[in-house]
Image (cartoon, rainbow, N blue to C red; front, side, top):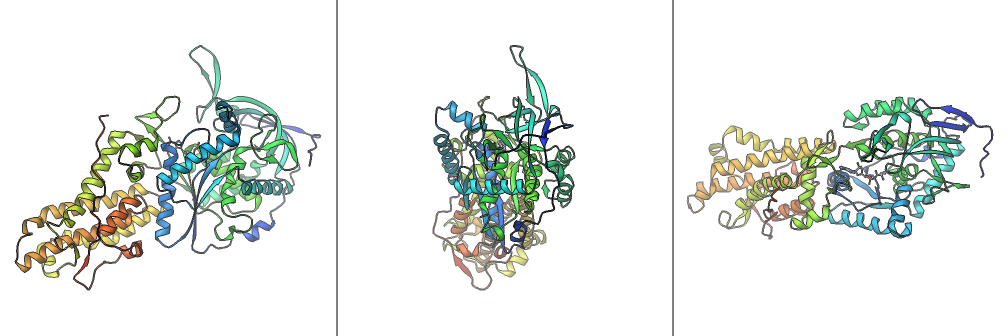
Length: 568
Ligand code: MSP
C-alpha cells in the first residue's frame, strides 16, 4: 500500500516539533477482535517483564538491576504458587544499533547476535530465571509488529505526515523545542542536547507515519487514576507528559534507517524502534493465539529513563489496538557510581561479571546488595567497598554466623533440628523474646506485602532485623556454656535455644529465596527442609510440632566465605 502524500496540512505542536500531515481522524470506537480474545479474567497466572536491552554495548550493573528486581518478583510469585511468565530480551533494531554495528565493522545481524548473547550470559550467570528471552529480530516478533501496525492503520490511528523536530539517537526519542538545551563544548562549539538525558540531538525533517497519540489523553488519565504507576512519585512525571501530548512519529525513512522492521506495504519506511520494541511484551505473551491467559502484564519493571515510553506511548498503543494496558508499571531510579553518573565515556561502568569473579563467583553477592540497597524512588550510589561490607555484615556475620553456631557439631553433636521444651521456654526466655519469636508469622505477612509491592529493600531489612535479634538472643543465652552438661533441664534449654534459632533461620531462609536463591538453598538444605516445604505458606506455620527432632541436612552450612574488603 503506497501512501498518498497529497492533501497535507501543517500543525504546530506546542512542544515545538512540527507535524505536517494528512489525516483521517474519524476515530472509531474499538470493536476489534482483540478485545474479545484479551482481557479475560486471568487465572493463577502472573506476567512480569524487564525492559529489553539495547545491544549497542555490553551489559552493565544498571541492566542487571532491572533484571534482578523482575527476577525476585517472578521467584516470589512462583514460590507462592503462581504460574509465572517472566520475559527478558534484547532490543536489536534502530539507528543506535545500526551505527554501533558500523562502528564495529560488522554486519548488524552478526553484531546484534554477539551482544545479545552477552546479555543471555549475564542473565544465566546471575540466576535470572526467565521463561522467555525475546530478540526483536526474531520472525515471531516481526509478525506481531506488522500485524499491530496494520490494525492501527485500519483503525485510523496511524496517518502519514511530515515530522520536523529534534531526534536523540542515544534515546531513540523525538523531542520538541522545549525538550532540548543549548550546550557549548570545550572548543566553543554550540550544540543541543536532550534536557532529560543530556544526550546530543540532531535536527530531523522527514516524511513518516504518525500515531494519533494526542487522542488518548483522557483514556491515559483514566488509566493513571487506577494507581498503576509505582512508586507514586513517578506518577507526577507521567501526568505532565500526558498533559503535554503531541502526536508521535512512528516510522523513519528507510533511506536513513534500514535496520528495522519494514512498514507493511511501504518499503520506503521503517517502523520506529520504540513501537517495535514495546510490542515485544505482546510477542512473548503468545499473541495472537496464546495470550489470553497471561495478558495484560501484571507488572512491568523499568528504569526512570524509559518511563514516558512505558507509561504514555505503550498504554496508548495498546488502547488503540483494543488491548488492556499493563496493571502496574514499577519504575526504579538509577545507580550512580561513587556519586557520578555511570557512563562508558567516564569509564566507570560497573561490569557485573568482573565483580562476580572477584568475589568467589557468587551471583548472590551482587543480587543481595542491589536489592538490599536499591530504593526505587531515588538514585543509589554504588561503592564497591560499602557493598562488600554490607554483604559481610548481613550474610556472613548475621545469617551465616547464626547458622554455624547452631549447627556446629560442638553444640549440636546429634546434628538435629530439635523441638522446643515448653518448661524452659517459659522460664528461661523473657516475654519480649517469646513474643518476637511467636511473631515470626507476622514477619512472613510483612515481607510478603513488601515483595508484592516490589519493595525488596524493605522486606530484606525486616528479615535482617529478625536475624540480628536472634543472634543477640543466642549470644545472651550462650548455649555453648552448657554444651557438656548432663543435666536434663540444661539439655532441654540448649535444644530450645537451638530450636528458636533454627526456626528463625528456616523462616528467614524461605523469605530470602527470591533475593538470594543460591544462598537460601544452601541454608534450607543445611536445615534439612525439603524443596516442597519452602513456600511462604509453610513459613507461616511452625515446622516441627510432634516429633522431638528432624535430622539436619548433610552440607557444611557455609553460606558465603567472608569477602576481602577492597581498600576504597
Ligand atoms: N531498549 C530500551 C528499552 C526498551 S523496552 C521495550 C532501553 N534499553 S537500555 O539497555 O538502555 O536500558 C534498559 C534498562 O536498564 C532500563 O530500565 C534502564 O533504566 C536500566 N538502566 C540503565 N542504566 C542504569 C543505571 N545506571 N542504573 C539502574 N538502571 C539503569 O532503554
